[in-house]
Length: 101
Image (cartoon, rainbow, N blue to C red; front, side):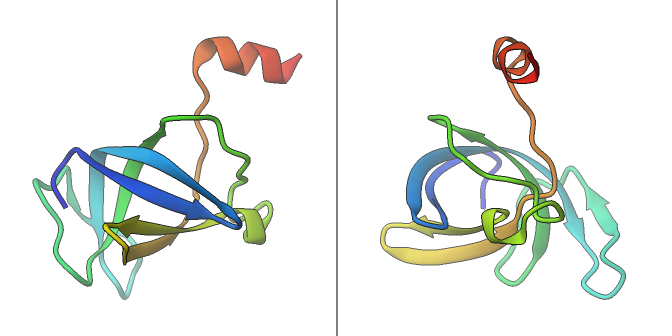
């Protein structure tokens, strides 16, 4: 996976375009700790932490808060190329103020 790629994320029943714009780290499969920070690429079978930017707003939750809404599949050209969970959510500053009251 290159540092910037465009793919489709499938959440529960929605399919949305996204941009993977930061590969944060590759995880050790046994300890679940980051073993390599800021890698240039990842290989098939790697467990990674990535930062994703959605092209449109989507309704999702962190996996630890609501597991059914915190899972996704990564699809590209009709193939499933990854699955994962949502660890954290970030909001644009103007949207954050609206959602917090």
